[in-house]
Image (cartoon, rainbow, N blue to C red):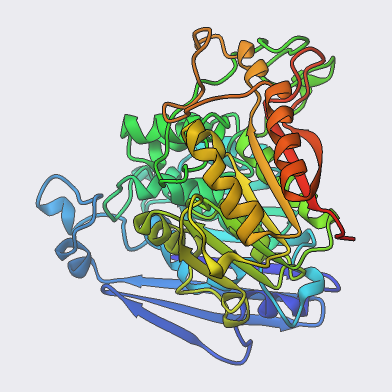
Length: 485
């Protein structure tokens, strides 16, 4: 299997920096009976190409425990697994360019987030018409060439794979994530066992573009090997209807607003309002919430941030990408959830400079913890509603009296917005583990009392699409300690 990445133009020499592969060296990695070789066949001032060649031992593949083994004995040995792009190549791509996937480059930080004129070429890609259906909605220009089974025997017809060239001006990390997700989808199988962790992997790499993809359900079904439970979970998360894991690290399920349920909503943008909503791709509420809190933190003079009830690290991931946050602490009461966060964040592959800024600690919202004291900011994102109301005073003491950060950001569902969830009975909560859900007035009453008792001032904003009558689906309070600039 082979895949090449070409960059042309003024930044061509930066491709190897972004991929962290020296152009004068051949990089080899052997694992589980396969050898991945990365080399640079073209390195010119205005054009650079980096190739990834994956050589697979079919016998070693059969002896492995892959989920994509053929059901008949001979088929395990006579197949296209070593030649046609599939999950083996996707995994090799992720392992060979792990730093580029994370969007890190010290040498060429100026182009890490810059759309670049990239060209990906794959000589043998399965999928037929599905290739265009998957890549063109993402902005790729697709060129295909059919391949004969044998040029000397035309009667045999065409092969089931095609030579494909895909071109687009795109951020490299985003492009790599798209190929990592879609290569196995085109093949329709994976060489490894797919369990629940695969859902999180898929959301981590596709969460910012998969939600609005017109073939997302097909992508999810194929990527998760048609396991309905995992597919449903992924769809719920992309729709923003599954909260981040709670303070105990236990994820739950919510109900999503139906299309057009929000006043003024049209088309497929279920929670968008206004006349142009139908033309706007739907963004998950989970992402809007995370990005809104990140934007608020960027407005404040903070460099150390504690994410209390961090779950699997969705907020930690974006905080680490911003160098202004010099110390990031993720705290959760569940050791298993912290272990999941380690895997989701890729701590074993994370650059040392970035790893040094991160600390994961087991801690509770309702107990004093000296390790969390004195931070510039503490975030409680969709956490307080998972506590019994009678335990909130203990949280207030732990956060506002003992830890006493300069800023505290608290987000929680807005109960008034629940009328836009048609599957949610009146008086019911969005999440099975929510102990309460407050209206905006109830949230303000609590926040004003806490601020007055502990020496803070507080301001409010909404996260997610605003409705004139019911407000935003998530409400955010920003507490600032009196005397803090």
